[in-house]
Length: 203
Image 1 (cartoon, rainbow, N blue to C red):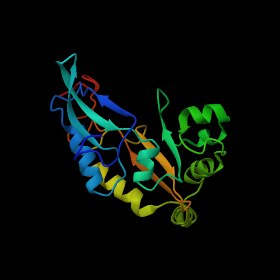
Image 2: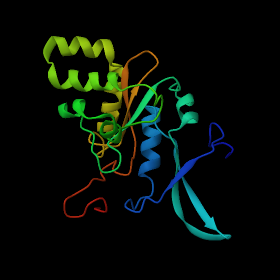
Image 3: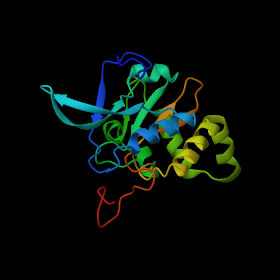
Image 4: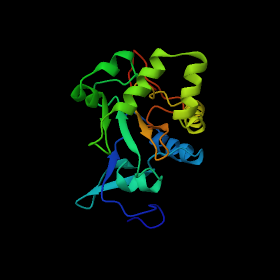
């Protein structure tokens, strides 16, 4: 527990090195900006790490999107998928709907309610790829939390979140049975982006 910073006690957290961000602030500022815009994101703030009473480095504390985090954002009854983890990018491709369960779960890592099947997500992928016009629009309004998705996309554009879409987001089927999305990984924000010549370390 860190008085004045953590809203609740935590049992797990991450320390990000921000090795590619010379400002050491983008992840913190982006997290605060998204939260201020009403987007459910992990808390982040800078910390000084010491080892054996000696300075070790500057890091960013990042809240893990676990049960404590889900409860704080009223998502504890939701189905949550991390999209595009590891080396598998998540573009909601039409062929994904035909993947076997193990391959599907590698691309769409189900973090809650693992006992349930993936029919709802497969339906989302199928509808987005095989319908258009009024039919697609009607389905989206019935099955997607449109205001929250639009808000997340608008905030991502405003804060220049360059690393969302093919990965670094979660798909959430909330307790009302509607889909929404949550962005993660904010090192490439506020003008910092990957270039072919310099990669993530580009200035």
